[in-house]
Image 1 (cartoon, rainbow, N blue to C red):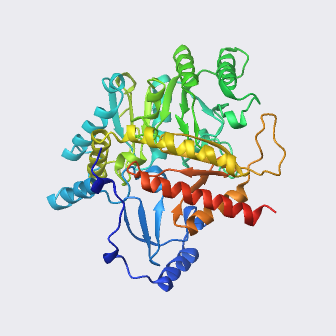
Image 2 (spheres, one colour):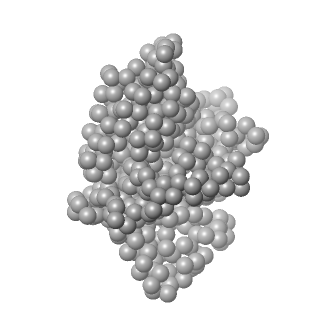
Length: 467
C-alpha cells in the first residue's frame, strides 16, 4: 500500500487561496451568459475550483470539498497525484513533442507497455491497441465500426440502461431516451436487450431468477429465425452500468452472454470506460466474471486525468485500412505519460484490491441507511463505484416492493451534501441514484466523512421535503 503522503488529500492551509466570493460570482455569472445550455455539472455544482489535491477541491470562495465525482471516474489517483505530476513535468522539461498524431514516441511505447501489462493475460497476448480521439465516446465509435468491418454485419445488440457516449453511434447504443429524441433514426440497426436490474427487474422477478430470465430471453430471441433480429456484428455491454444507476452486471449472466455471442459469431465489446483501471475492485470490470471480450473500450482513468481513449482487440480483427478511423488528438504525449504512471501505480500499490476491500465496507454502510431513512432505497455497486437509490416513501411499491424513484428528493440530498462539503453525482433511470466515485486513493477517514455527510444530507432532505 502507498505511504500516507501519497494517499492523503490534506491541504497546506498556509498556501490556500484568498477567499474571493465576488470574483467567484462573477465567473459563474459569465459562464451562465456565455456558455452553452448543454452544461450539466456546472448547474448542480456552483463551485469555481482554484486548486485541488488528492480528494480535496478548493473553491475560489475559500471552501474545501471532498470530491466523490473525480471527473466522472477519470481521476483514479485523485487530483494532482505526485506520480502523475512528476510524469508530466518530465515530459514538459524534456522538450518532447506534445502533439504527435499517431507517430511512434517513447511515451506511447511506454504507455502501451503499461496498458498491455495490466490487461487480462490471455487477452493481452493477442491484443492490438488502437489510439482513438481523446474521449471514450470516440473509442466506442471505433469499436462499433471495427466490429462491423470485421464481421461484414450491420446490426448491433445493446442494453436497457446503457450509456456509451454522446456521438451518434455511441448514442444509438445507449439506453437513455431524452438525448435521442431530437435526433431521429440513429438506432435503426440496434436491438435492445434487458439488462438485469434486480431492484427494478424488467421482468418483475428480481434476484438470480431475473438474471436467468434475462439471459434466456436474449438466447431465445437470437435463436428464433422469426425473432426479427438479423445476425449482429457486436454486443456492447458495461460490466457495471454507471450512468444507468450503478447496476453491476451479474457474473453468471455475463458468462452466458459470452457463450451466446460466440455461438452466433457476434463480437463482444466490453465498455470499460468507467469501470476500468481498478475502479470495481479488479483492474478491469470483466475480470470479476472471467469473461474475455473480443474488444475492450478504455478511457477516463487510463489517461491519468488527461484526455486519452483506446480500444484493444484480438489481432485477427485488425482489418482496418490506414485512416479508416483516425483523429487529430490521438497522440497526446502528456496523457500517455500520465496514463502510464497511473496504471503502474495502481498495479504496484494494489489499489484495485484496496477498492474492493473499502468498497465492500462502504456498501455495507450504505445498506445500513435503508434502516434509518425512509427514502433510502436500494444500495449497490462494486468496488469504489457505488450508488444509493433515493425513493419516495409515500409512493406505491411495485410487485417487488420497490418504491418509486424520487429525483427531486435526490437533488435535495445532493445539494445538502454539497453544502456540507461533499461533491456527489446523480444518475440512474430517473436521475435518483446518488453516485459515489471517489479516487482509489481515498483514505478510511475520508470515506467515513463522506458517508457521515451523506447520511446527514438524506436526513435533512427528508425533513425539508417529506411532510
